[in-house]
Amino acid sequence: MTQNIDGHFDVLIAGAGISGIGSAYHLQTQCPGKSYLILEAMEDFGGTWRTHTYPGIRSDSDLYTFGYRFKPWVGPPIATAEEILNYMGEVIDENEIAPHIQYSHTITAASYSSEEKLWTVRATNSATGKEKTYTCTFLWMCQGYYNHAEGYTPEWDGMEDFAGEIVHPQTWPEDIDLKGKRVVCIGSGATAATLVPAIAGECEHVTLLQRSPTYFFPAENRSEFADELRRIGVSDELVHELARKKALFDQDETCQRCLTEPDVVKAELLEAARGYLGPDFDIDKHFTPSYRPWQQRLAFIPDGDLFQGIASGAASVVTDEIDRFTETGLLLKSGERLDADIIVTATGFNLSVLGGIPFEVDGAPVDFSQTVTYRGMMFTGVPNMAWVFGYFRASWTLRVDLMGDFVCRLLNHMDAEGMDEVRVELRAEDKDMEILPWMDADNFNPGYLMRAMHLMPKRGSNPIWEHTQDYWKERDELPTVDLTAEEFVYSRRAAARSTAA
Ligand SMILES: Cc1cc2nc3c(=O)[nH]c(=O)nc-3n(C[C@H](O)[C@H](O)[C@H](O)COP(=O)(O)OP(=O)(O)OC[C@H]3O[C@@H](n4cnc5c(N)ncnc54)[C@H](O)[C@@H]3O)c2cc1C
Image (cartoon, rainbow, N blue to C red; front, side, top):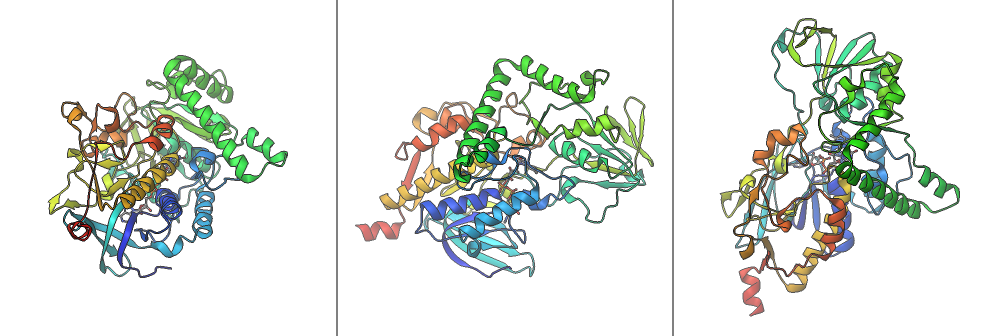
């Protein structure tokens, strides 16, 4: 139920997705004296896992690492959205986070006063349209990275001619009837790979139409290691800790191998696909990407379900480009036609930089593309704010835990020193460093990121100004960051200064 909270808080958290709930847990555990409020646009918690309701919706990371470090995961490694929401619900209940969440309130503006050392945040109640104003000392942005209202659908010629239904997975209609329908699903990422096998038995036939292939990693949805530990009576807490370590070790090894022996990893992935699809299937055409494994997120498919769907004949894959939509389906560049009753556009997201919220500092609008990011967590010119952007290759949530520790340490440090404001500023040695796009496109290059790179904060060539996307490096570095180093500039409110004097 929506409560009615307003006023001043030490910390405002934007978003009650997996990042916001995790950050709230760390804040109340590590900074117990701080007042805080989570502002959430939706009517309930969960973010991604509430927005997406398409058939089969599930994680593609294992929950030993996508789950929080502090809350054991006890189910199979790959989880459904419902299981993830239940898990988050338990975290909220067990830690009494619910009274700190203001649902149905969308943040519409945030402005900072250097004099007051204070953020003023405006939010609109989606039920009543009423606007509220909050103030806080520190803003913890956990609003995710894409626009929840609408997914990304490219413009194709003739879309208006199509007599059937066009559906984006992000806004999946509750009442859609797939029985007896020919479905074409455009896309080759994790969403298409989840959706296609999930509806294969329900519709007449589903075709996955991809412009270019993706690597898929088929494996059983179980952790033999965790199951064995459970069998011998190890506690849930210890199983979680150890299974998490094992998953991280295995992921690190895979990542390293992708860099040092990409051809071997590639051959293994293709061989696994061949195991399901048989020797006559054209693996070269449909499942052999042009990029190195891990240059884009490697899509895990539990029990090879996508391949099983194709092998059974209920699903098929076509690798081609769309020339145009027609009344009956799609005309492809090869000249082939694909008839369809429903076309699903699993074509990705619209990236949203900090929730699309207009930010101001001392009355001047903040253009995030003109800021430099401190380790992908804070921005030059934007005081008292942290931004949670998780990992792409490792589980997103690993960074929520690491950043929780970092932000709490920073807040406690400021309290200990009697400081009201922290800014990150380029050091003398950074003046001549190269200013680069936020992500190295050669390192990681999914479409939604490439389309919006010009809006993202910049990275610098000196290590502390990079957003490394490297969990293993950050795991060692973040806890040892020297908060008195030159890049952190602290100050007090004028009133507090005069009291102290
Ligand atoms: C279908 C799908 C599957 C995924 N699977 C995985 C996976 O297996 N592993 C992995 O690591 N990552 C995965 N990801 C990436 C995923 O987005 C993150 O892992 C994670 O769930 C993001 O959590 P978040 O809390 O940061 O953001 P979100 O889940 O996007 O939540 C942000 C919340 O902030 C709220 N919000 C946004 N703007 C405002 C505003 N202006 N005012 C108030 N509230 C606001 C939103 O309503 C939302 O509830 C997946 C993403 C998708 C879409």
